Amino acid sequence: LSGEKSYELRMAPHEIPPAGAFWSIVAYDFKTAQFFENPIKRYSIGDRTQGLRVNPDGSLSVLIQHNEPKEGPSNWLPVGSGEFYLVMRIYEPKPSVFDGSFRPAYLRELR
Image (cartoon, rainbow, N blue to C red; front, side, top):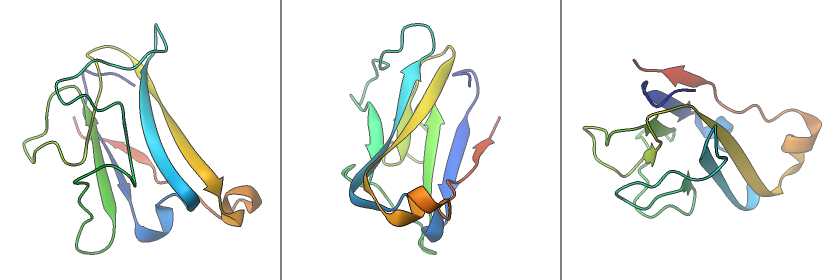
């Protein structure tokens, strides 16, 4: 993935990670495997992220990009301008994670 592009991870209600404790998505710099410094000091986004907004239909949209989205920072996971990779963490995963019935949402390139 590249910080030169913008991505959306739009999770329908059944695609939100099934966690008994919590879940998060983290972006790492491809070269250094470190977090990206960013103006809002956000290094992961998940169900414990304050101010995270759920869509009226119960879905959740996470915007993953270098610059702050025009919609504001509530659902933004900042990344650097170079290459990066994402990791989804599910703490106390529910059985659907292990039996294969949970399928994470697809990442979609916006530009």
